[in-house]
Amino acid sequence: MTNTPYLRNLIIETPSKPGNFAKVAYAIGQLEGDIGDIQTIKVGTLTTIRDVSVQCNDVEQLEKIVEAINAIGDEIQVQAISDDVLRAHEGGKIHMKGKVEIRSLGDLRRVYTPGVANVCKVIEKDPQQAQFFTGISNTVAIVTDGTAILGLGNIGPVAGMPVMEGKAVLFDQFAGISGIPILLDTSDPDQVVETVKHIHQGFGGILLEDIGSPHCFEIEERLKAELDIPVMHDDQHGTAVVALASTLSACRQAGVKLEDSVVGQIGLGAAGLAISRMMMAYGVKKIQGIDMNEQALERLVQYGGSPAKSLEEIMATSDIVIATTGVQGLIKPEMVRPGQIILALSNPHAEIQPEIALAAGAAFAADGRLVNNVLGFPGIFRGALNAKATKITYDMLIAAALAIVDSTKPGDLVPHPLDPNVHQNVADAVEKVANSSLLKTHAHTHA
Image 1: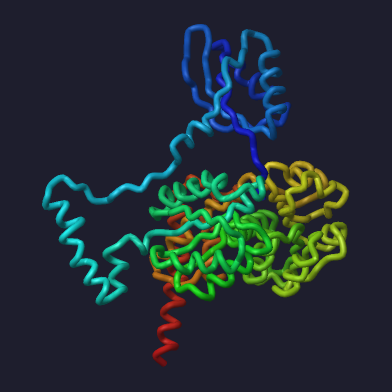
Image 2: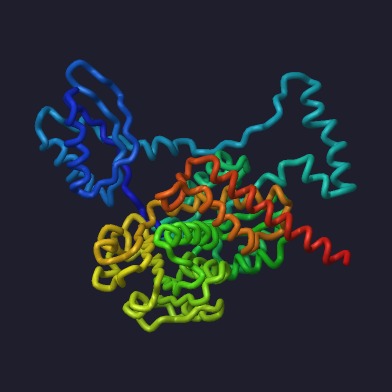
């Protein structure tokens, strides 16, 4: 759902008079730049210097923005352009650190030899003790083959490492989980599955990340069937959880009942198919989809959905439209049906801009800037690990989506990703469902 944004920081000097920065913001907005963080570096008697984060589509757009700011006059100038993104990645973003300090010979003997041998013997006698005496149960492998890195495509696992490190940082910050990137130099499903099977004992869960379609489907299904720890492909199910939460929030604001609606899915890649499956698992009775890939349509039918003949048919017959194609402007205003809910989730170039969809008669419209997987995967794995679950089920994923909805403030589509409450709420909801499922399984086994 994401293409690659061009993010730079502009160091801008303006006279210290009210209204001058508004001129800067207006110039950026006129050229469709997206302002992020604004930090005041210096407030002087005559001028103020600010560090302004600006997201663009490319370097050409950024150059036009800089020219427009410098052309305002009134001594407003861009003094420098910095790249805080690259600086933030220098030396990598993660570091493995011990939890126990070694300050004496006694500490060393307890943490390492000879004391550690006693712990090894305990685990040898009862392997379940590793849950308590090692970090395995709180560690997730972040596995990629580098074939679908963001909107960059197949750039390889090493080039995708910054994304994997980012996932590890999010795991740590939002869920207290140790995420370990695993870069694979193969995309062959047999080799990927065998490799993960050989290393899985060192992890409490497996997060598959940025693995392309269609081999991602086979890899995930086989690992889920063959391993006894939670496995989830984030581009499928993490996306689908947040998409379901967004759709439920939109339905709540538009006064629509999701279960009774016809949902049209435009684009049936990994995310689109997973969203369709999630909607059906939630209880949507009719899902119809469209994609140029015939195999994707066959998968939709296999999962219980219906293929549509055309984009026009999807738009004409669907109450809720979800688009994940990455094609800017694919949905034309004249296609919008009055009262529709439209979630054009490709980012930063939506299939239709929300304001255009609303002007054309949509009851609710949003793009993909807020629909971020980070709202889902940290809490999902935290809950699954807490419950010692062996699988991540649709019941757990739906519980996560509902927790996101319940954490959303009135008027918002989803919570802010930096809200710590949403991650805790998702974890609690997933853990509750997982524990309930485990109790049922235990009762059935001993019945």
